[in-house]
Structures are given as structure tokens and as C-alpha cells.
Image (cartoon, rainbow, N blue to C red; front, side, top):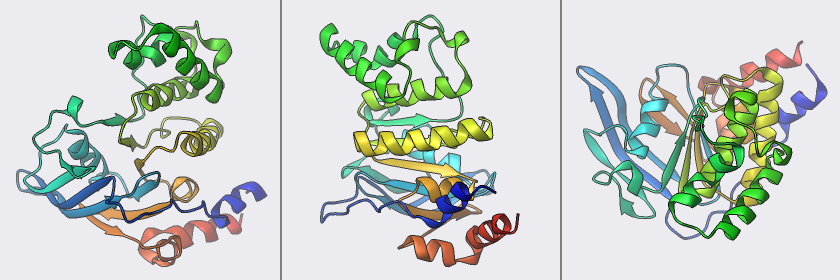
Length: 260
């Protein structure tokens, strides 16, 4: 394994700054069952402004259901969900001010790169001059300025994900929900997208909840951490506590790469 990858395990990201303000996202005792199968079991979680909370867990553990509950795509049997102290359970998805992204970029094929990014601003009837300023800035930030006139079929998977991120940022969500967004990318492109995510998070200071099954990705991107298993969620007070818990698999992963 390359030295740079080992360092990415060892060097923590700076934790997000917490204040006395309420958490941006708050879940309390959320339970979801599909028939006799309980998918989320009494889940409670706080995500504070300008931080990336990473939920680590294997396939089928309930990670995607958790995000869909927050996005309004899945109802709950019990519990509450708040964004900025507003209860979301009875609000439709479009009124929640959250954006849900997964591995599919879902670009509009009839629009070019510029207009895909500008789509939300056009809906809000933002003046054209401001649209151009905002979109040009984001095109520069994601490194796709020369590709503004291209259509989706002319783009790579990584480029499509960059555009999806840019469009999400311009929607100004209170919380960005990320469902293994880099999971379908090859290893090199995935690493590039992780680094791009870090730069965008620092530049635009958004709040996000990211779920992944990849230990390295969790450590690289997270400010705080939680582990989901069998629909139950365990949150950690610090990176050190997350790494020290044998059930997270972090120590095992690090030791594996050290011996390659």
C-alpha cells in the first residue's frame, strides 16, 4: 500500500466546530418495520452544522432506510425527525430542505453540464446573471469549466458525480444526505472524488450525513462517526473511540494494509 494511503488512516480531519446551538439534524427513537422485520430500531442521532457525520455499516443494515426517512421517502412507525428544530414527519420531500444523493447522478440528458447545475436556480427564478456567476464558480470548483457545454453521455462516471454534487450545493440544503455516492466508481476515481468532497465541504461549509460500508472512506471523510448494525445505531464521541471499538473493523483494516 502506498504511504499516502497509510497516512490517510493516521491523520484525522479536523472536527467540525460545535456551538451551543441545536443540532442541524436530530433524530430521536426512530423505528421502521417492514412487516415482521424491524429495519431501524430506536435510532437516535444528532448532526451538527458544518460537519460530516459518517455512518459505517454493511449491506442491509438499514443505512439507506435511515437516509430515506430523513428525505421523506420512507415513513416511520415511531420517533421524530427534526431539521433546524422543525419536525419533518408531516412535510413532503420537496419542503424538507434536504438533498439525497446516491450512486446514480441522475442528470437531465436533454440539458448540458451548465444547465444541469443551474436547474435549481432556474426553478427559483434567480436572475440569469447570478445563475451564470454561481454556476461558473462551481464549475471551477469541481474542475469542469471546459466541459460546460457537454451532455451527460459525453461524461465519465466521476464527472457526472461532480455535477450532481454541484447541483446539490446550489440547492442550499440544510442537510446533504449521501448514500455511498462513490460506490460505483473505480478506485482511482473514488479517491479523487473523496478529495474533491473534502475541498467542497471546506469551501461551502455544508452539513452532511454520509453512509458507507468502506472503513477507509469513513475515516477520510468523517468529522464524527456512527456504526449501524441490524438496524441499531451506535454513535461515538470521538474518532479515537470509533477506532478503538473492535466492532467497527477499523483496527483490523489498518493492520491489514500495514502488512501489505
